[in-house]
Length: 183
Image (cartoon, rainbow, N blue to C red; front, side, top):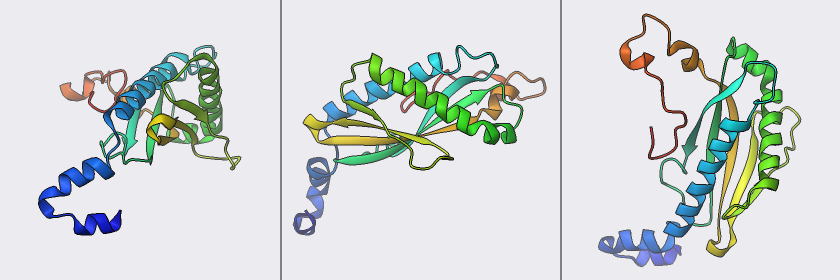
């Protein structure tokens, strides 16, 4: 492919990128539908049966997936799961393992319950005190896959949104979830 790129005239670079680097639109449509379902699932299910008040307040996507720079073949993305009702960042750090385990449990449950457009695999962690967990969505017919790193985080803005003294734009509640093209 490098030789093909070297021989490509400047006026044909856009076509080269579309033909050789960008994933097809079917893949993008399918992966977006699967990711939106996963985000909604996490917001509805994580910690719903728990006695403590911690809940998922929103899920934010990052990385190449959110920036529309996913490449053909294999890409990586970040999924940050924000929790409300935590008293401090130290509390979040102390309970990170609990949060990751809950997310893992819910994703494994989802893996058994739902038929995805692609193949959904929760990855096992090699590190006992991992800061995140991973899952992969692969679409063999498109020869595409995206690996997601899921990271728990304290939603510091959640507690402050309704506080008096904030400027009006800060006190407005953000959307329930933020995915690319939304929010």
